[in-house]
Structure formats: C-alpha cells, structure tokens
Amino acid sequence: MTIDICVVFKMDTPFAGAISLLSTLPYPYREGGDSSRGRLYFDSTGPKFIITASSTEVERCIAAMSASPIVYEAYVANFEFFKD
Image (cartoon, rainbow, N blue to C red):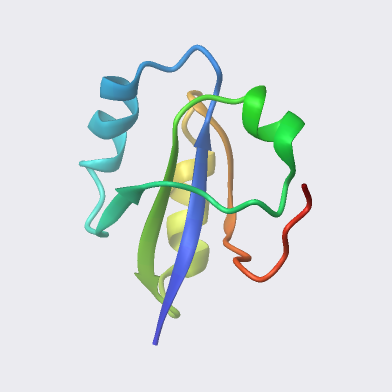
C-alpha cells in the first residue's frame, strides 16, 4: 500500500531548489498539494509537491523532509477534506 505525503516548501524556496531536495530521495514525486490547509496557507507558502511512499516508509520520509531548512511542512495528504 502507498500513501501520499504533501511536502510544502517555504515561500522563498526556488522551484529548482525544491526539485533538488526531492531528487535526493528514493520516492516518486509530482507537483501538487491538497486543499486541507486552506487558501491562506496555500498563498503564504512556496512550492508544493506530493511524494508517494510505501506505508512502512511514511514516517521516515516525513522526518527526512521536515529536517530540511527549506521545508515548511511535510504531512500525510488528505484529499477528502476541502477547507476553502
């Protein structure tokens, strides 16, 4: 089973910098996010990506992303909740 993880970068992070960090991990990723955090959150943060990881790798992936100073937040995606 796989789980989608949203990785949200800080506002001043260039797109290329985000790609560079994501490319160091063994997980497939794509540009995008979820809407569970709302529009103000979306507008006040930088590039957003979705990483697909196995259920056994979720915590390790989130920890690896959260350790980077250019990452605002990493969390399990919730595509069923629409805040705005």
